[in-house]
Image (cartoon, rainbow, N blue to C red; front, side):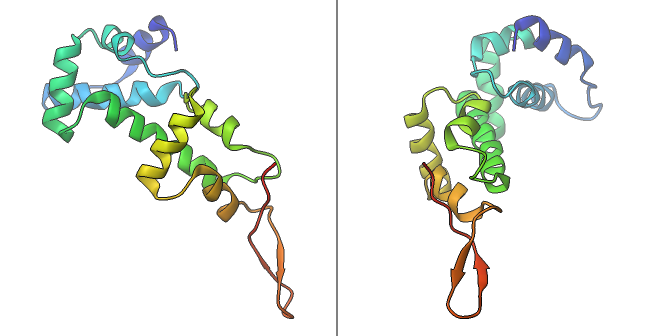
Length: 150
């Protein structure tokens, strides 16, 4: 996402009356990180769009989540990627396509982070839940999920 589109997105976000400025800042940063998922996440550009320093953003995330903004925002994107993998049909989608569509350009790093957070590889998630997979089990002709990924 270009800085101009981020600035426009921030301008359109309503502010919450009772929330602290820290809460509003964190909420806006999260919305921006999820607004253009196919672009890699760049904290300096995010700070420019939010008109805050990196130190201010880092402090807000530490006070809210106890972790740096890059880790929290990456985790949000990982969660979105997991949702996409869970709903994808492995006949038509690949882990690579899904990872890249959520801004993960380094596929090895994506896979390692994904396994740490969710306890399985992205391809296992795609294989386990893909609606297009079929396997005949026993005599019952029951359909179960299984998919081979090329």
